[in-house]
Length: 235
Image (cartoon, rainbow, N blue to C red; front, side, top):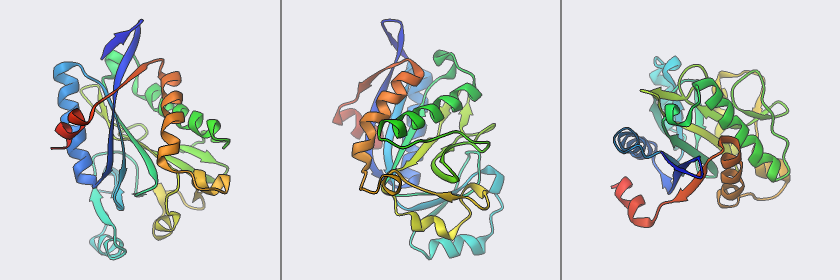
């Protein structure tokens, strides 16, 4: 992580629409660069439709996997914490791959920072997002942003380098969530920026206010990668 005027600098890579395995590969490559070159990154993307389960549901039944795949989505078992959720087009997915040591944050404070950045994005667009007992960001009883890390809240962290991150519903097709109990939380729903505002809010519209909120929350500066750097990561 480089520093500008005493503030850490992170590189932002816009990866577009990716399959879940492809995104995991990009995270793994970024983690190696983070360790070897001290280069910390924010990977921004959308996923092709996929249901993912964390390590707490490693024995998720094959019958349920077959049922969900029949809906037209992929199904992936992951090393993140948390329970089953859905990712798909219309979600702003941010995977920070960075050193908590260089960021000078513990894991719990880091997770709170991710929630804070998502809350800042919501506030910037006129939606009141809040923390709750369960990890993530909520609008009343409806979850608008999931955090997917490794203990204590789901973010994966190995050798103090993070992976996975957050997924915020912008104009996601929320019907995908009707086939599961999102994050294993009974009796609560999901929502999106579009549903709350009564208009279409795309991922493209959400990215600028999200990055502003992220910079404020983590007191950092951001640099943007060029197409060549992005293509090298993906290939």
